[in-house]
Image 1 (cartoon, rainbow, N blue to C red):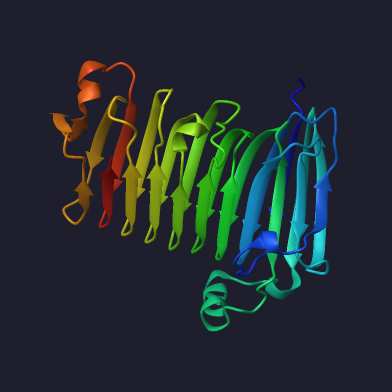
Image 2: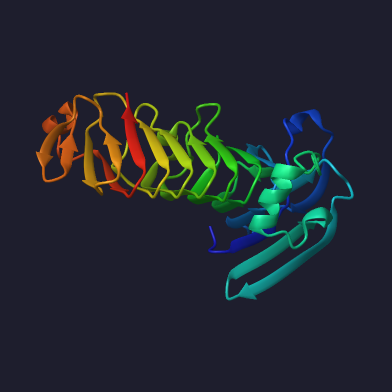
Length: 299
């Protein structure tokens, strides 16, 4: 395989809709099949609305669909080549949200929740391509299904959006993931079947919103989860009891951390489960930094 890299920076703009699959979608953009494309770096930016991402059996690395054929007022694409790397930047802007900032977007969402209710996008990724994904959502909602995909790095940022990430059919990431990063300011992020990401490093950051992480079953690699909470909350659904788990805590007097009842203190601000006591060489490690918020562990 060559070292060629495709990078896409895609500005998509959304508003609220309950279910995109009930709508007729129209293709707005695609990346054609290329024998020189080994890796795609895709950046998605949304301001409001609903986004859906999933893998498909396709030779095309990227396809973008929208409900409204005339939804885009101006789209720009930029291609750059450097040595054996190729970068493609695509900026897609919905005419009704051009120049919309965070404060305006929140006000629009509160006082006019039905405006642009059909602004929905479907992004399809190929099961035959290696990806670095950067997914950024200001408002609205996003459903991300990474089943059967090969994702080397993942970064999800939510301003005040509700994001649901899952491996819906139980198929794990096709490659080992270097970094799995999720961050929320005022919104909510739910991650199911985190174990299927095969991530070595997991980073979860909460401002005033919330994050729910379900570790799933059959954790198979040594991983470190770095979790920080400002004034929001985080809930972590632990893996089965036979998975060794170590928890490191850096907290303040104003925070609240609820550990599982069977975790014992093994050092200064260190806690482990019974499986960790038996195997201190291979384990899942949580490193917690909490300000005024809370972190809860569930079985």
